[in-house]
Image (cartoon, rainbow, N blue to C red; front, top):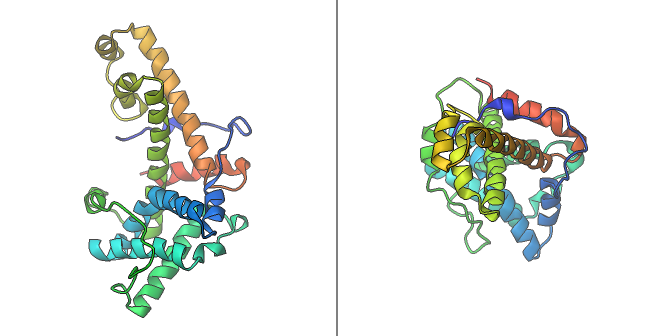
Length: 247
């Protein structure tokens, strides 16, 4: 689903309660216990596709790209490479892409794709839809780095929507959300049509859409807030996100 960029909130520093940041997960993943494995699993689940698409734009085929991403996250866990991550050095997405570039270069030099993961901890990634998703990306002249930023931004939107879905489902409002999701972007259906489908008045639907958009804005701020060390950097990162999504 395409989402409108006008849903990005303006400056509201200090109004959101930030959950532990992805940097906090990075710190947790530096350990060697179960919590460290769980933290890395969260990181992997959240950010594997932008790295996969980056590898594809570096002219790797789908199988090689999958192997590189799998090997990269596995190495982060095996070799404690993630210990080099430092929030002071910048945004988490910048660290992740730089580390992946280094891994790709080393993997080419060592030509060890077939050796990775043998008898070692394995990070589970569902690549079933990866090549299909990549095939749907627009053919453009953007650099792989620009495309990575765009895919990262889309991941932020998707994860924000997941937050909203979880909340609506928990409150027994899944059916309402199903009908209202189109109002988060793309072609909006007539309010009267949605009102009839939900058995609500048109005015009630408008109020519900307003609340959904507000919830999505808050979820987006929270999601972006997990990728920066200082909450005051959220507004700037939101601007970067919208710039990455611009045509």
